Image (tube, rainbow, N blue to C red; front, side, top):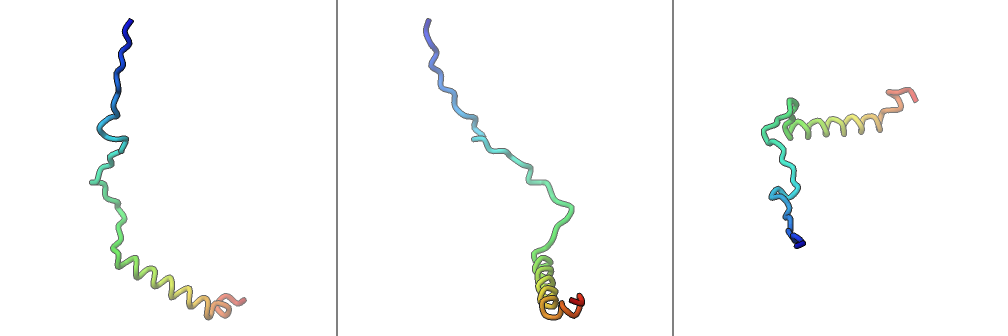
Length: 58
């Protein structure tokens, strides 16, 4: 009996998964909003480090 020496090639997708680019989240932030939020958090942290003992009664 003759053996078939066939070589199977991988699929053309290369194992990559395609996701749809049309998906949009219902929650979206502009980069400016994120920067303002980070600055506010930094200011709150500085205030707490400076006067936190008197605010919290420690």
